[in-house]
Image (cartoon, rainbow, N blue to C red; front, side, top):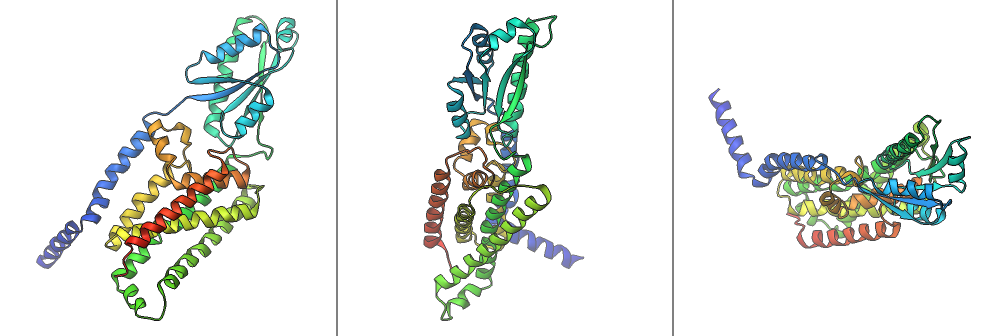
Amino acid sequence: MNALLLLTIANVRSFVRDRASLFWTLAFPLIFVILFGSIFSGGNNERTIGFADLDGTGPAGQLAAALRSIDGVELADGSEGDLLARMRRGEMSAVIVVPKGYAESLAAKAAPAIVTVYTDPSQSAADGATRQLVGFVLAAVNQAASGQPPAVVPTFESVQTNDLTFISYLVPSILGMSLMQTGVFAAIPLVADRQKLILKRLQATPLRRWQLVGSNVLVRLVIAVVQTAIVVGVGSLLFGVEIVGSWPLIAALIVLGSLAFIALGYVIASFAATEDAANGMTSAVQFPLMFLSGTFFPIEAMPDALQTVARALPLTYLGDGLRQVMVDGTPFAPLWVCFAFLGIWLAVCFGVAARFFKWQ
C-alpha cells in the first residue's frame, strides 16, 4: 500500500513537471467550454434576399416594403436572372420573384396570386429561416384580405439542378474532416519515434531526410485515398449521393488539402516535446477546426467574431471547395480562393516545420 502511494505521488509530480501536458489537459477543457458557449450564445441573423419585381405595381411594392421592415433582412432588387446568379455565388440566401399579373390576381380574387421563392436546400438553416420569413409576411398579406381565401401563396423552388439533399451536403464535409484528422494526427507517431530515438537511428542510415519525410507523406496520402473511397462509396451506395463534379478537380483538392494538414501535423510535431503533449495539441487543433469551419454548424449562425475565425481556418476552404465540386453546393468563397488559401497554409506550415522540426 505504501509503495502504491509513493508511486502515485511520483506520477503526479511527473505529470505536473510536464507543463505542456498540464496545460492541454487542464486548460484546454476550459477553452472548449468558453468556445462552445460563445457559439451558442447568439448568432448573426442578418441575411440578404433578392427581390425580383416583374409586376411593377403598388401591391408588389407593398410586399417589398413588408419584407424590408423585418429586422435582419436586407432586400436586394434586380432582375430574376441576375439575382439567381448572385445567389449561386453565395451573395444572398434566397430570391423572391413577384410574377407579372400579381396585382391583377389580387384584385380578381378568383385564384391566389403565386410568389416564387428560390432557396438552397444545402444551406438548411438559411432555407428554414427563409420559409418562416416568407410565411410570416404572406400571412400578414392574407390577413388584410380577411374573409377571403388565401390571397397570396408561395411556391418554393431550388436553385440546385441536382436535387441536393442534406446528406449530399454532409458527405463532402465529412470527407474534409477525415483528411484533416489524417494530416494533423501525423504528429503523434513522429513525436513518439523521436522520443524512442528511432528518428536519430534512422539518421545514421544511408537514407536522406527527404526520403524519410516523403515516405511518411505518401503513407498519409494513401490513407487519404482510402478515406475518400470509403466516404464517397458509402454516400453513393447507401444514400444515393450523386457526385456531379470533375474528378481531377476533386483529386486536386484532396491532395492539396491533405498536404496542407500533413504540414500542419509536422508543425505540431516540431513544438511537442512529448507524446502526451502531441496528443493534447492535436486535440486542441482538431476540435476548433471541426466545429468552426462549417462541417456541422453553418458559419452564418455564428457570431461575427467567430465567423472571422472561420475565414482563417483551412478546413473551411477544403470543405467548401469539396462541396462546390462534388455536389455543386452554394460557395462560401470562390473555388480559386479555396485552392489559394490551402496553398498558402501548405507553404507557411512547410516553412515553419522545416525551420523548427527536431530529429532528436
